[in-house]
Image (cartoon, rainbow, N blue to C red):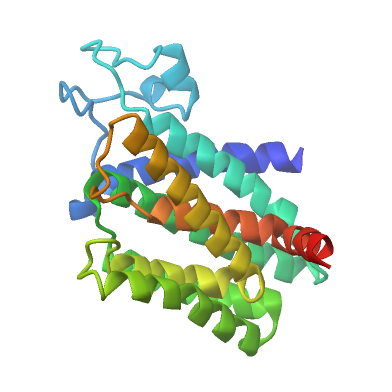
Length: 256
């Protein structure tokens, strides 16, 4: 029951994040302004705004103009539903008192919320907000210190995450990767810590390489085309955060 409630709560968060993403240049309107269809401008009513449910009931089309609704809306809502429930799954096994577990869960939900916005920004604009990136670094550092408990593993995790990005950013003049990825890598290195950061980097670069190769083979991208890397870094961090320890043990077991 707890996970179901958290999943529903996450859907609501995701719905709000969609509003924030759409009105990022005027965040005050995200709280005060009425939601409208981005195609026809018709004001949406409560029945049009039920997270995930409205999209499914409307078959992915605006009730008023019948034009398609972006897949971003249900994907963001569903992602936040899963991530919110998963946050408690991870933290509830953490050996701490209930109050600390609740605090860590809330921080992790904030982190996931920031990451979802940053992913959408990177995919749609190939840019990430500096303000959100710095907030991510702060919350990741707080979470990392409370969860991992050792400053050394956070510092090594952050350095290990940043170095390969720096190597790709500056020698290429940002042709291979952008400066915004440096701040995201730093934050995620603090989040997953050392040695899990190796799992994050391996997952991100292997995943990015495979997707890039597929896009090139299907002629949807050129070898010189820029591919947003934040989604791969985030995917790697999630894998490392939830399964990093197990994957490292498995790998080291095969190597020994």
